[in-house]
Length: 411
Image (cartoon, rainbow, N blue to C red; front, side, top):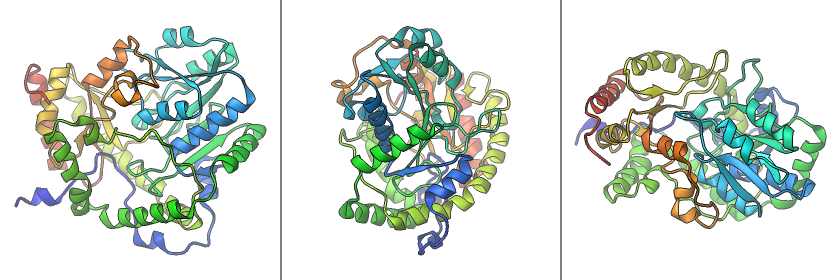
C-alpha cells in the first residue's frame, strides 16, 4: 500500500491537541482565557457555536416582537436550523458577485420593521463586511450578530477582534475550527445589559446534562487519539471517500446536520482542556499565517482563479484557502482529481441554503444567483502544516490543469 494512504491531511488546519491538555487544570477558566485572547471584558462559554447563536437569538427575541433574521444565502446550514429552533423566520440574502459578503442593495431591501437581527458571516477565516450590516440594522432598529464560528483569532483593521463590531459575536470550538473542546462555543457582547441577558438566557435553556457531557468528553479523548495523519485516514479519509463513491457530496463534507440542537452546559474538565490549549493558539496561528503568505503567492500565479483574501490591514485566519474557479466545469475537474485524495482538498458548504432538501421546511425557495454560483465554483485547499510543499505543488498543478481544460471532468 502507498505511504500516502497513511498520511491524511485535514481539510482545515486545526490546532494539534496535546495529551497534557487532558490533565486536570487549576488555572484560569476557558472563559477567562478566551476573554484575554479576544480582548473583551467577558466571554460566555456554550456547548457549541450553534448553541451560542440559539442563546443570542432567544435573548433578542425576548426583547422584541420582531421575527426575521437575515443571513447570507451561502452559509452553514446550522445557522438556518438555529433560526428555526428559535421560532424565527430566516431571510437569506444573496451574496455580492464572486464574494462572501451579503449584497448591500439586496440586504437593504430585505431590512424592514420586522427585522430582528442581521448575521454577517466571517467565512473560512476571512473577515466579512460588518459595517454595511450595521448601517442597515441601525436604519430599521435591528441588532447585528457576527457569525465568527470559522474565524477565531481574526482581527479588524483597528486590531479589535472580530465579533466586537456587532451587538453580539459568537465563535465555534468544534472540531476543524482551530482550538477545540470537540464541541463548544464562545459568546460575546459589548453592552453590559445584553451580556447579562445572554448569561441569564444561557443558564435557563442549557442545563448540565451528565450523560451528554460524558459522551462529549469521550469524543474529545478520541479526537486526541486520532488527530494525526494516520488516525485521520481512518476517521475522516475513508468515510469521505466512501461518500464520494456513492455520490453523496453532502455527507463527504459533513453538511448532513440533524435538525435537533443539543443544549447543555460544558463540564469543568472540557473547560480546562480548552483553557490549556488556548495558550498555544496565537503561536500556532502565526505559523499558519506565514505558510499562507508563501502559498497564496503560488496560488495567485494561476491567473484564472480567485483566492479569497482580506482587505487592507484586516487580518483573517488561515485554516484553509477558499478558492473560486473560473467555471463550475473547472471546479469539478479539479475536484475529480483532488477530492478523493489525501491532500486536504474539499468543499466548504455544498449548496446555497434553499437547495438543501432537508431545509426546505425552513428556507424558502428564492432566486439567489450569486450564492448558487459561489457554491458551484468554489473549493477549499487545506493550510495544515502537515501538507508538505511537494504535496501543495501537486494541488497547484492540478488547479492549473483544471483551468486549462475548463470543460473537463465532473464530480
